[in-house]
Image (cartoon, rainbow, N blue to C red; front, side, top):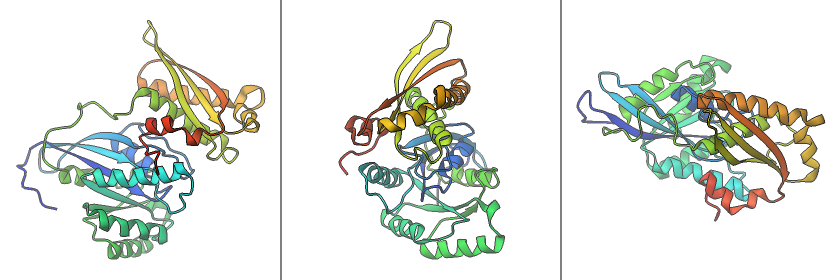
Length: 310
């Protein structure tokens, strides 16, 4: 990529984080931004909506850049349900709208058919892209080099980076390069802003992360979370009421746990994170409700920024 901007000129642009499910996009986003803006769990397809994380970075050689990272849902070819189809469409739309694309590959899983299909679609979009091999702490260096060679043979990447989003190894080098690669121009957001996600939606996402982590395989993808009320209190704290929706009555006791112990644990851990993010006390109250067809709720798709008509 070439850029004729003067050294020291401000830069700003959008970088889409693209990849197969569980490539580590959300973990990388949080590391690049330096704060929690996207939820993380060991389960694939945790990210349902577009998540924007904003990072300020000094440009090597002078100047400062604002990079708006777009964390997209994982891309796969198994999208049979409406929600899965909408998530995949949102991921490709995020890539098409960005100035640059960063394709993440789980190095431990290698360059399989799923990733190969993504690189083929990248050619059609025509956006400049960098290759990011993630989880390098889990694979030998000779296999990493072979993986990089195979990926670059499939697509003309601008650069290749090897990182561990979990440990932070190599993430700084990636951020430095992107700071110099985004277009010259004024910043798009306030300098101290980390995300454009409303606190109501972020609260629901933080709770959903804990639902994923606490319920493991018992409710893999059968739950959704919605913030029903957000009340500002006179003492500077906030009261937040969230509903955890499950699809069947038989799932309700699973989410609640014996004597309500499980939902209390979910609430306690989510409340701690929300208070840290908000920088003030948050009083979080959770209820578990049955809504059989929440995944077909048109209004919910709008809240998530997803296209219902897929």
